[in-house]
Image (cartoon, rainbow, N blue to C red; front, top):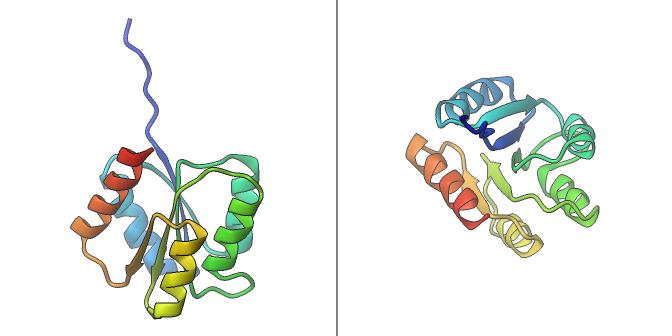
Length: 126
């Protein structure tokens, strides 16, 4: 009898609908089960109900930014890797993200191969 193997679950959180659509399709094409959220608040609520295998989150969002979201989730005890993405890279944000436990910090626009390699590394290390 064949064993059912589930796809790794990736949550994508970004307030830019075009990014959600494009990156969501791309992550799905890599073979991951991707769910998108258009705000940090939605993302936190979803993560509190079901922990994903990885979270990709934008830094610049209203209400709660991606770095605050990551810190809140990790402080709750959830063990989930974060990939931080941003169109406005700042060395200070990169330092905060990496010291807080982010698996990666990526600058938009990134290419398909960069994202594939980053996700592959996250799941290889898991």
